[in-house]
Length: 413
Image 1 (tube, rainbow, N blue to C red):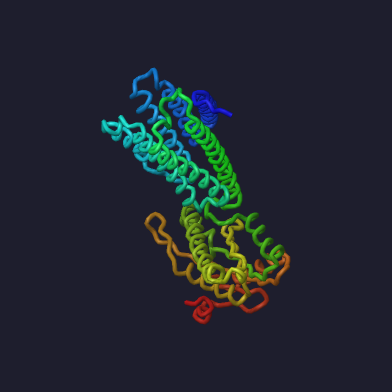
Image 2: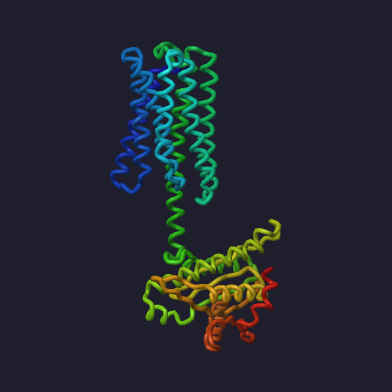
């Protein structure tokens, strides 16, 4: 089978044009999806690059060589902008144009501009640099999750960078890699075909990863309380059920309630109440991460239990599920209570302080979540009845604040 280079260029131009129109229409129908605009720009300028490059025997060299390669370089520069959107990163604008600037500066050197092989090497090196930059964006975006998708997209980009490097090596030893265009050259045609296929795979990988990322973010938003960033009630109950029923792990459930929260809202306004909720949530998140660092991260893989989970059940009521026995959970609860009692929140220049009461209930593997919630809720009510700012263990005497010092050993403090 013989590959015809002009036919491949025409095919590539048509495919790029169709993709550009598709992404442009997609962006016009939903302008919040900026990634579609960058992909439309990438595919569109690739179309112009193919058409300009095909005019090699008819147009001036600055059009068919310099401007055509500018288009090809910007194809990958604009693609980098799309990748940054997927990776949820904002890069510097100048990085999208530095490649074309470098190419232009190289073309201003007469000896280099007149050497076909050297020009190919410079342009391919710039394109390889953009491919590597895109690959690094995916590998560094660990916070997105979707590890398999990110690795696959990064692998495709590495393959494309390798093809660009191979083009550099091949062009240095073969003077007719791309010129003259209309003479039979199977290696040039094969490289164009492989680059076209790789570019299409890159488009599919990036758009699929963007859709998966958006779906994951929507899933997280549906499970997250918008004010505090903690799990909402439904997500927390699902996490509790997974830990206790599915994973059959022993656990302790801690229910917490900010004391006199209505007085905070009535006396200082709802903005102060929201600030108190956020401050408490941040402190609880810090305590949970510290707990996980001591129990999950520090344990050998085969001995790791599930991570702790924290959620807002509604209003000023919170819950925390700890994969441990009641003794360690009691120490955790007291440390959290004491930390909240010490902190202050700045609201309109005024310092606001508050306390929290907690009820704790332990459960063995396979216990019913609803029953555990009821026991922890009764313990919380008892803590409120006994004066607030205290921790109550279900089925035992109240834990007064004075016992904090005797529990610090369990926290390694």
